[in-house]
Image (cartoon, rainbow, N blue to C red; front, side, top):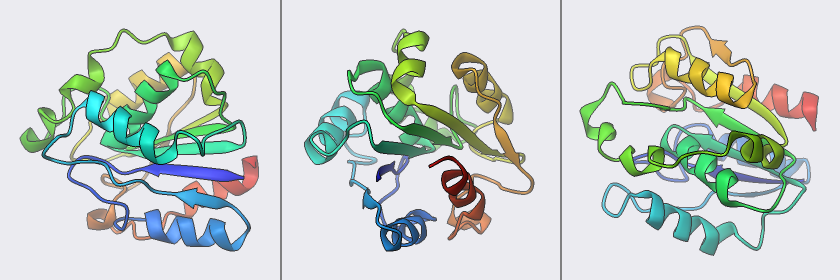
Length: 185
């Protein structure tokens, strides 16, 4: 199995639970890539799609599970909208599917939400879908996870006291996501 993890706005591959998950899955034989995306300078949909394609385009195939955290969820959504490759699974963690509660992020995500999404195509390409969202997320209101879930026909997993499911909220490890992966793949 393969995995790609897209970090979010003002993020990088070595933060949050990404290294922990990559290490666990690599020990089990998975091949994991966590590309570096330009942020905050150069963060827009066109640049992120270009960097994602350059770093993981040849890697992604039908045995791939793609994960996006925060702004990376929006990249994942746009990637699925455009790709002809069907994934094994797609996971959206703390997706800001609408205006952010944090001003510094709001302008960074605008180009990612301008697409008129083909939801049937996205569902077809996404494989098994999961959404994880903290009940008290300070960045992306919980209603956004429910709206994305409605569009993707997937009930979000709401994490009690999860915050933005990042290191600041105590998520240097993410056992719930790991458990979901073990159960489904």
